[in-house]
Image (cartoon, rainbow over all chains, first blue to last red; front, side, top):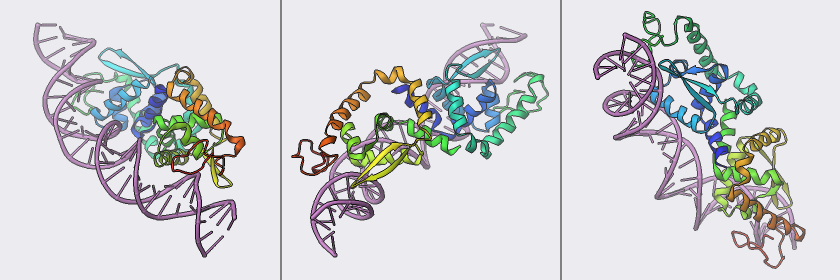
Length: 131
Length: 131
DNA sequence: TCGTCATTTCGTATTATGCCGAAATGAGAC
DNA sequence: GTCTCATTTCGGCATAATACGAAATGACGA
């Protein structure tokens, strides 16, 4: 029954739901998630760990960055759960803001995700030159 | 997003999963759940409240007893979630024991659920003559 | 090999959650 | 109305979860 409980815990926290909602839109590297959510890196990392342990996401490395994506095997289930709650989710301010910031963030991808030398258009949390 | 989080919290605790697993088998009054799970009344009640607030169950009164049943509207979703985790759930000892005790308990229903005067075949938690 | 960052872990304070027994509540039976 | 129980809330403690900044880690590029 452990898997089910891990799934429950993963869904039972606002920050984690926000992460999952973002990942349902696109595969994202951690800095993109962080910038979209305006949460500290350490906090985000903890939640990502929880979500990972629940088997909801997989990670892969692209150059220097780790990309998170929904585990294909659970995506259908996750979709059904989210769609069931769709009416409430659609009108959620926080999720809305996250999505908006994500879109702005994704617009910068052509200039290189998290790439160096973009001219500091967007400053990442710890002073890096992340896109 | 609150509904989704409540759903998550409801699924994110072993005791509550055990309750839901029992309710997937049959509509049950609280004393039947308690006897099947061997957990204190106050503890059980707290979890039932959580599950109720998540909108996963409805209650109805039968004579002196309150019967819990899965909310018809969420049952399909719940089924899909449980079926997704089926392999792990099927081999879970605790759930197995709960189900076995439930079966024993249901066998006594003909003698009247929680009825007085059965001769104390089964003693309920707080000294009553509950079936 | 070294430097640079993205990412994770550590230390800690705060808050939430789980458990139980005992007391309170409340619905039916007489 | 009163009695009887099933059911819920209360008080108190123990454990676990969340948050953050700062320090540690670790992978890639040069």
